[in-house]
Image 1 (cartoon, helix red, strand yellow):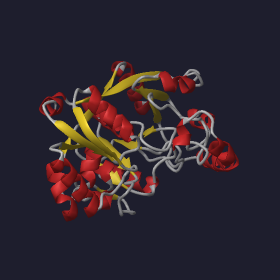
Image 2 (cartoon, rainbow, N blue to C red):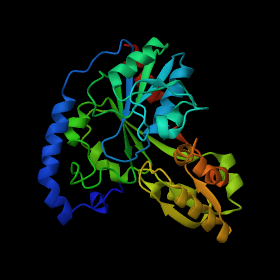
Image 3 (cartoon, rainbow, N blue to C red):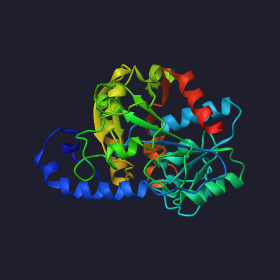
Amino acid sequence: MREPAFWWRQKSLASAALAPLGKLYGAIAESRMTRPGTRAGVPVLCVGNFTLGGAGKTPTALWLAQALRAAGETPFFLTRGYGGSVTRPRLVDPETDASSVVGDEALLLARIAPTVVAHNRVLGAAFAKARGAGIVVMDDGLQNAMLAKDFTLAVIDGRRGIGNACVFPAGPLRAPLAAQLKRCDALLVIGDDIRARDVTAQAGALPVFHGHLAPQPDAVTSLRARKVLAFAGIGDPDKFFATVEQAGIDIGARRAFADHHRFSAEEAAELVMAAEHDMLTLLTTEKDHARMAGDPALAALAVQAKVLPVTLDVAESDALRALMLGKLRR
């Protein structure tokens, strides 16, 4: 499902009409968030965001796990495996598992650290601990109170902020902002913070860190001489297109799909033919490319599509690392 455009406008008739449903949904979500969670027996770090859609959680989780490993810890990722078919806890094999089984994000996470996919976070954490996890890093789950958390970092997309500040379905918030802020230990704004200032102004004493997603230089160098057909099925495809343009890569055409979109054989063939017809190079995100893994119908698209990997750069990296380790080791 594509998110409605009115979510990101300050005022709209649609948002006003849906406000009563948003109030009800928000009350239920807030009530669930207040439940005491189960202790995992190991420290739990949660990377979440306030809104539906992408904000940069996965690159943030990767950065945090690498920081933990550099500090001598043994992190395991825990993710729900959105888009996959697995329900019971499973350790991801990035070489053999398909995204249709474990989800696209799990395949990216598993390249950096052991990754457990589980719908039930408590069972998933226990599964990870039994296999040697020293710290569980949850990719998403701020609003899920089943598992008690020791450190929660909320990621904010500085380009979009929290939109109209209304709760789903009137807006993109997963729960009332104040209720979510109460369960955070720190905030990370990714990108320009203009749209995030409404949130950080309400953060009180919460530490606020800043980062940006930078394309890998080698990939940029190899693509600058080409004109590309950029396509993405992520929470905010326009952010990917903006990253491509800011890297100096010429976009000849673009295709936007819904978040976690699973490409059909027809869509894959259309993308390949369109690129060949206009002599463009296919370019997509790591998540989209991971979603093609293990599907024979998408093999041609997977082979021809280039990827623009991005990594997170945190301005106050030492301070964030110290805060995180202090909370988790306490």
